[in-house]
Length: 57
Image (cartoon, rainbow, N blue to C red):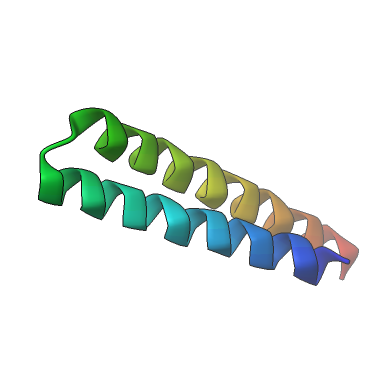
Protein backbone atom coordinates (compact mmCIF):
# COMPACT_ATOMS: atom_id res chain seq x y z
CA UNK A 1 0.00 0.00 0.00
CA UNK A 2 2.80 2.39 0.83
CA UNK A 3 4.25 1.86 -2.65
CA UNK A 4 1.13 3.41 -4.15
CA UNK A 5 1.40 6.44 -1.92
CA UNK A 6 5.06 6.87 -2.80
CA UNK A 7 4.23 6.73 -6.50
CA UNK A 8 1.51 9.35 -6.07
CA UNK A 9 3.94 11.62 -4.22
CA UNK A 10 6.57 11.27 -6.93
CA UNK A 11 3.92 11.97 -9.57
CA UNK A 12 2.78 15.07 -7.67
CA UNK A 13 6.37 16.32 -7.51
CA UNK A 14 6.82 15.71 -11.24
CA UNK A 15 3.54 17.42 -12.05
CA UNK A 16 4.65 20.41 -9.99
CA UNK A 17 7.94 20.56 -11.89
CA UNK A 18 6.05 20.61 -15.20
CA UNK A 19 3.82 23.44 -13.95
CA UNK A 20 6.82 25.42 -12.74
CA UNK A 21 8.67 24.98 -16.03
CA UNK A 22 5.59 25.88 -18.06
CA UNK A 23 5.00 28.95 -15.91
CA UNK A 24 8.57 30.10 -16.48
CA UNK A 25 8.32 29.48 -20.22
CA UNK A 26 5.14 31.49 -20.72
CA UNK A 27 5.88 34.11 -18.07
CA UNK A 28 3.01 33.06 -15.81
CA UNK A 29 4.26 33.69 -12.29
CA UNK A 30 1.11 32.26 -10.69
CA UNK A 31 1.51 28.92 -12.48
CA UNK A 32 5.19 28.85 -11.57
CA UNK A 33 4.38 29.37 -7.88
CA UNK A 34 1.66 26.72 -7.94
CA UNK A 35 4.17 24.30 -9.42
CA UNK A 36 6.70 25.02 -6.70
CA UNK A 37 4.05 24.53 -4.02
CA UNK A 38 2.97 21.24 -5.54
CA UNK A 39 6.57 20.04 -5.63
CA UNK A 40 7.05 20.97 -1.98
CA UNK A 41 3.88 19.12 -1.01
CA UNK A 42 4.94 15.99 -2.88
CA UNK A 43 8.43 16.13 -1.37
CA UNK A 44 7.05 16.57 2.16
CA UNK A 45 4.67 13.64 1.79
CA UNK A 46 7.46 11.52 0.33
CA UNK A 47 9.65 12.34 3.32
CA UNK A 48 6.81 11.31 5.63
CA UNK A 49 6.50 7.96 3.87
CA UNK A 50 10.26 7.38 4.20
CA UNK A 51 10.06 8.08 7.93
CA UNK A 52 7.19 5.59 8.29
CA UNK A 53 9.26 2.98 6.44
CA UNK A 54 12.23 3.60 8.73
CA UNK A 55 10.16 2.84 11.82
CA UNK A 56 8.54 -0.25 10.29
CA UNK A 57 11.88 -2.01 9.82
